[in-house]
Length: 411
Image (cartoon, rainbow, N blue to C red; front, side):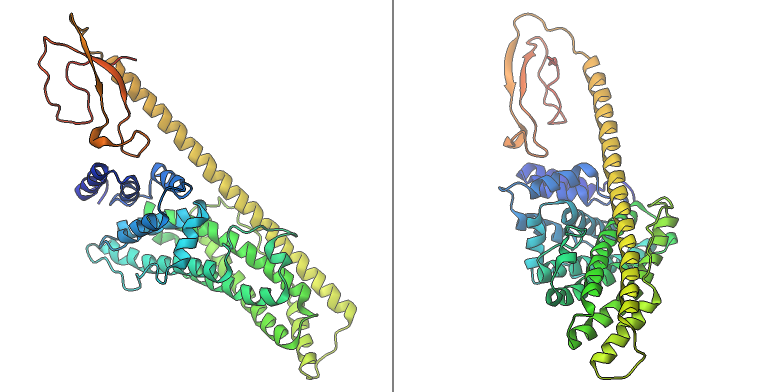
């Protein structure tokens, strides 16, 4: 199925009549068309999240209602739209989503209408779990890990030991949910799943960058921690090494489909001697006798590890900047094409001039259809007075949005 369905068009028309611009935009962003949500609808919804007179619960509930559809296309695009607003919308939306007891309940979703529906339903279930975990992380930490300040003065680098030990497992859980999406290049077969994968790709870079900085901070504090803290930190570090390997596999899929164009970040692991030094230090705190490690050797190993992980952080930041620049460049290109197309159509429209008016014209203003304001999506702006010819019959147009027959455009 391609293009907007009759159901999509009817739903959009109904929202136009009731004056619900947000509902119409959500409907337009989540049509049955097998492609990602259109930029103009996403941009409008982002704008809505920044307007104080817009009800965030209404916007969120409208998106959640679309996930009740039986169509994998509509549900997938509703998840994509929600994810996009989480990333680029006002933080008020994330706060509201995190405050809900339940978000997406799609663990049993299955579209049996077509063979493709079976395959895509699997990714819908995984994708919804990630968005649930993203909202849960925000509830627990009161911060979006993909948006926090990074660097030497960043949040994760300056966090105290106690809070750091509690925060890193939360990042791990969110990253696990993301990496569980587990697509291969052969399964990225349409514009819908490709759009979702692109958003996950961006989140993976930013999330792991925060994770990486937290681990650097933890390693720098490790040899001054208490015994219980060292035990937890050691398990976190072992998990970190495993997640780095999984992220490398995830990024290879992105490289195969050309998202990062062969320039994947360099995930440099710390030397293996560091793990041995961490285990030996914990053993000494527990009273177990293992090979003694000199202070100079331990300091050298730690310095080498921090340097390697810092290089990984720099590489991730560069990839994040490049990905965002590409997104903005693509958006600018789309905008230029849309403006050019609009101007061409406008010239064509006004080149078809109506016959010159006869004597005694009378002007009447054209009012907005359905009483909608011109600034609302779907509204019809006020137009200047238009001459009406008396010697021609005034017919009721088939298209309520079109000009009255026999009128002339005045520029």
